[in-house]
Amino acid sequence: MILKEYRKDFAIYAGLIGGAIILAYAVTYLENIVNFLKDLSDTGINSEFIILLIKITGISILTEFAVSVCKDSGESSIANKIDLGGKIIVISMSIPVISATLSGLLGLLQ
Image (cartoon, rainbow, N blue to C red; front, side, top):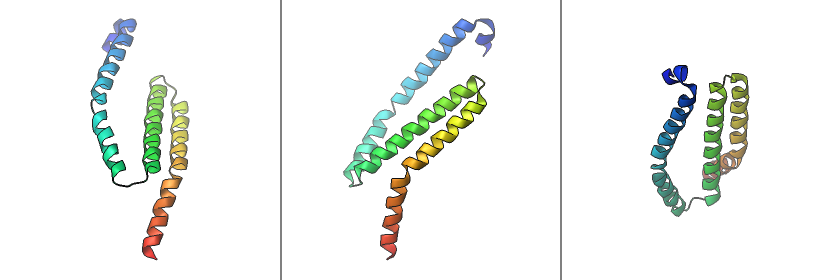
């Protein structure tokens, strides 16, 4: 923020470099996530549900990123609409998982 006051062009580069460093640090954790998903798929859980959960997670991350960009640029009303849209998409995509879970619970109760 201090750099932005004096040299706006350098502030952009500093933000990009900072973002790249954070991204490089976060990528190191991807191996753990991939190994967990492989182990989870070997347990016999339906792979369609795992794929759906990965998609839902990706949509949530992208939505959060878009909301942050909008808020940083001063467009909070657009950010709120993107947030609401992301939540609606996640809920609609999770209906098959909820349905299967409820069916399994009803099967156990009967």
